[in-house]
Amino acid sequence: KAGVTQTPRYLIKTRGQQVTLSCSPISGHRSVSWYQQTPGQGLQFLFEYFSETQRNKGNFPGRFSGRQFSNSRSEMNVSTLELGDSALYLCASSFREFDTEAFFGQGTRLTVV
Amino acid sequence: GESVGLHLPTLSVQEGDNSIINCAYSNSASDYFIWYKQESGKGPQFIIDIRSNMDKRQGQRVTVLLNKTVKHLSLQIAATQPGDSAVYFCAENLASSASKIIFGSGTRLSIRP
Image (cartoon, rainbow over all chains, first blue to last red; front, side, top):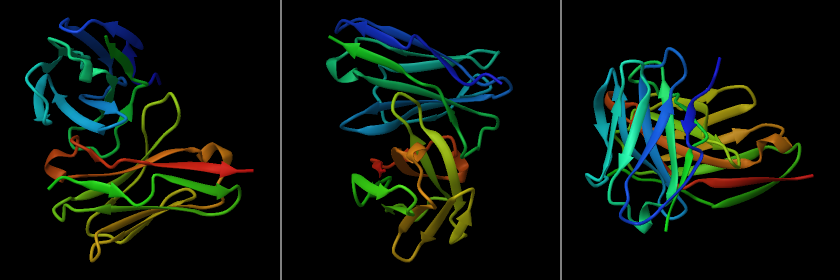
């Protein structure tokens, strides 16, 4: 069974631009969550989608948004990029909405210059 | 509040010995406590979880202990192997929003041959 796939793996953007990251969950998984990982702040929850609806949201500004499609694939978007948005963005999927066992992808490394 | 901390940022263990990774938490309302392992270049990987109404749970070569009196969580790895080298995160969540996982800052475990 294929794991969680995130694309692209690496991305370099300029401050002020916007970016869209993609996540394909494990087949059959309907919950997708996004996390930001930085050396300073560690792993921080961004949001979670289940059945195309945002169920939970972390403490991030409105520049961070996401969506989920009917096939459970998810995208997250960051607008007006700031240098501090440089991070590893991780996507995790789980079969049910309330699962402690989440399966993470390898992440997208975003660098804002 | 939402806070999960760790006692030590690094831990060095002789191959074959047992490893004990400690974690302190502050949110008494958490329903689950979870351990994740992150190897270099990979996303976090679920190891084991424990419900807040339990004090011990065992998996394959791993044991998690929960002491609610002092808000302390530990992960014991038996017969540590080179493949156990990674950063270990303790985490917590509420059953009502299980996909929102609050991660601690991580402990890097290194194995001496």
